[in-house]
Length: 101
Image (cartoon, rainbow, N blue to C red):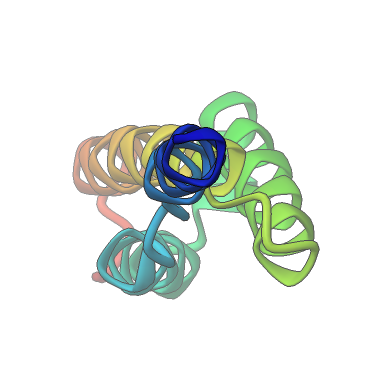
């Protein structure tokens, strides 16, 4: 009887400790968004959003390397959103000023 209880408790602990899968898709999307923002010179035309995107992407990579996937995913999503805003803002500013895209 005692063995069954111990076995049941051990099984519950093992089953409850599931790991979070690596956010590979979020990592890829964030990287693509940052690269797209870089290609339109977002650092020059939209520095606020660019620096937010760059900082979040850098933090996400650090968390990813440390295998803290929940925090990594959160940072990658933030980086993607900020990079998309930076890209859109830079494109708009470049169009207004007549800068070639």
